[in-house]
Length: 268
Image (cartoon, rainbow, N blue to C red; front, side):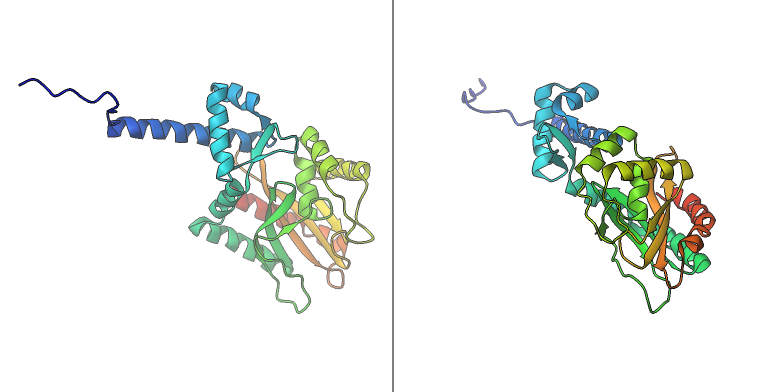
């Protein structure tokens, strides 16, 4: 018996294996694009993304459009470049705070507080701000409370200035030029050149200080937490009111902070 003719507009269904392969390829390209942006640490143009990933511009544009719509990418200031978006930052934050590893990091932080006797926090760079990943408070009646997930400025906090100081100089200069250097206290550095000079000093010294620049009467010091490749991924800081801890006292706690940062580096 002859086979019935198929209507001209009929479309053969895509075999499940082919569908899965196509989907996997698209997902893999999206992940590679996000990984590239995260690793570069700066905004990239569509042409740069396509060239570095070996993709046609049309394909790169389609992926970027999809990732923009879902919040994993964001337009940069000049609108022609792309940077990581809020959804990707939230994913990174949730990953860093996940399960057993989060508990181990929290224990390192708790032990550090027991050693130094003051509140300590773990932070990371989130765009042009500092993001609190974890925090353990010392049991004192007078203390500052900032919840996990809170953001603080770069230019007037110990962790923020540390992140600025240890990033590539070009990226630092671009970021400083874009920051609103808002005065928080009488000690806040609001001059871009003065902030660059201090960043150079921090990079040489290996730790940063907040000399009542964010909140009057509060001092802090911070050290970097590096991953296995030596990249700065987070910062450990201790802070306290000047009524209990002078700047000199804070600096004496640097060795304890560095030892905790070494332990923390294996938990990122």
